[in-house]
Length: 257
Ligand code: NAD
Image (cartoon, rainbow, N blue to C red; front, side, top):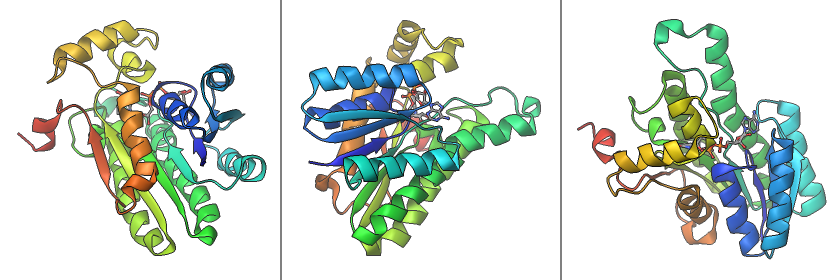
């Protein structure tokens, strides 16, 4: 059985990843800034799953929080086998000229520096053991421009680059790091981007379904399946890769067509 940490795990893709792991008997530390949501999810996972679920608060922009969450998992739950750097927000949107430097930096903190911190602290505990896998949640906006807000796009490109770079360093120590790049997924994040309201999940579903190549939007569970594959033994020779999970919705854009 594996010990797993998920950032931004209270809902959406992170919650689906946590559920996949507890469903097969793993021990999961769910971390988030949404304490109510995180604790609620842990209760649900405990009653539904075969594995163990725990929650600690961790703001991924805080170096102290990230270090403490990794230490909590290692001390109380067991050596970390898989870490998912998943937390994310939409960040600053709109025309470039309207972006304040403060908003830009805050978006980079939330989407890129946060991943750097999570990856660094995870590598620090995994490297001495010579094993471990890290999976970062990027985006199709991280492999091609024009699919999301400017700062979001730049930060997610940074995540993809960080994954490629760190993989080359840590491969010799038996560590792997990969990314999933979801297309539009029905979640609070996509609802907030489309309507300004996190709770408009039905609107997000309808719009994503209408725009989808398959007529069906990608779900958090779809992304979780790909992420768990990258975190597991079935992907042992996959390292430094970004796996697009979009049901072919963005293929023309990714190819520049
Ligand atoms: P979501 O809003 O459902 O979940 C994001 C979670 O991150 C929430 O639980 C939120 O509380 C948490 N979070 C926000 N700020 C945080 C912070 N500072 N510290 C810790 N946790 C924080 O969104 P989601 O769709 O599940 O997004 C998960 C990841 O997937 C993000 O990195 C996002 O960029 C990426 N993604 C989402 C989509 C999409 O269409 N939904 C597409 C591509 C990539």
